[in-house]
Image 1 (cartoon, rainbow, N blue to C red):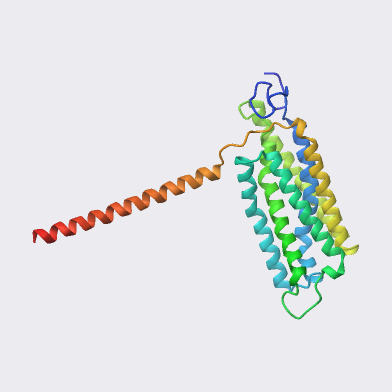
Image 2 (image 1 turned 30 degrees about the vertical axis):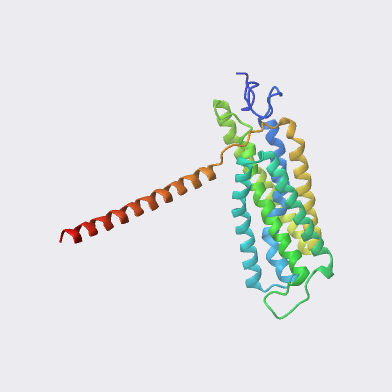
Length: 277
């Protein structure tokens, strides 16, 4: 096989059979750009959201910390949904783009609410001051952001892994290198986010910080879409989650069947003994 940076050879069967060669680091370069740009806003928001909840949305300290904790936990739990959909129904690229649109919509909602004072709650003496339509917009944007961000994180690393043929020795080495560069891209984006974007949010306005996060994510997903001609696209199939569910279901069925058989045997034994006596 001709040397191809760990990518796929022309005979590899997939959705892109008409293309001579796809995958490799040329394809993953678009993924690295998205990871760096998207993490600029995500990590910056995670660092500074508690202050935004306190000073703009007028939450108490405990409520702010609790809201951020629930949001972060939901984000990583929802990544399971992104991984499941990308494995079974949509391709991993389409899954990333769909959840990317949800993430951008959520960031736009947060930016809009941070910009217009009439969309922000008035100070009060309660733990939470957000209610009514303002609360619906606030919590709705957080739910969409958790869904979009989690969905992307559940499918994007797998999309990058698909670009390397693990049956080839060079492909295996390239796959390990890919995850090193993925971590490096995440670190670069996060470093810019926690310095530049957080400083802008604290000193120039929260709306500016959120707007830059939105713009960075939008540009990142544009780059991801532009890389489509270079991606090796895997056909969706069975998901590991489905296999786990099937195994658990089978175990529960067998357990119930054994318990029913044991109960029936005990009943028969007791009846026979009583008749004999």
